[in-house]
Image (cartoon, rainbow, N blue to C red; front, side, top):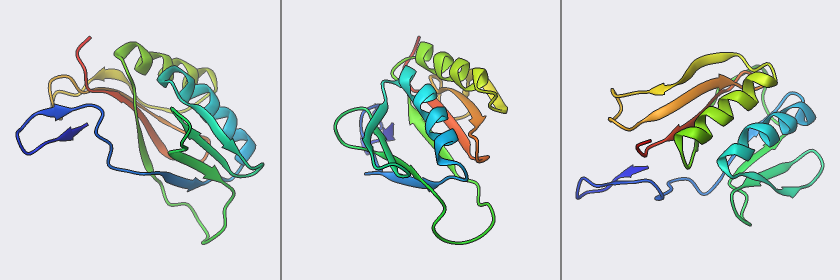
Length: 137
């Protein structure tokens, strides 16, 4: 969602072309993202063994892979667009079935805007992963 200059909220305007994160255990992270992205209409688009691209169409928008640079952990916040509030709840169910740490259960976040409905969990590497819907129920 982007706030356009005319003040209209737009759900399908994307800012990022793609995002890539490094994972401690690529197979574990791949299983996590396979499960939690499915309710959002996403899945594997490209798979190069240790490097996997996920998307909602033919183009991968989110990539995971093994650590290549640096040491230590730097948390990322990743927010995935959900097509509905039901998909947010399905994302949450998939994540908790896999044992993800719950940061925030699905709920409205009116401090962001009246229809901001999201949930936040930790992925296997400790990143803060969100599913968000900007549409009313």
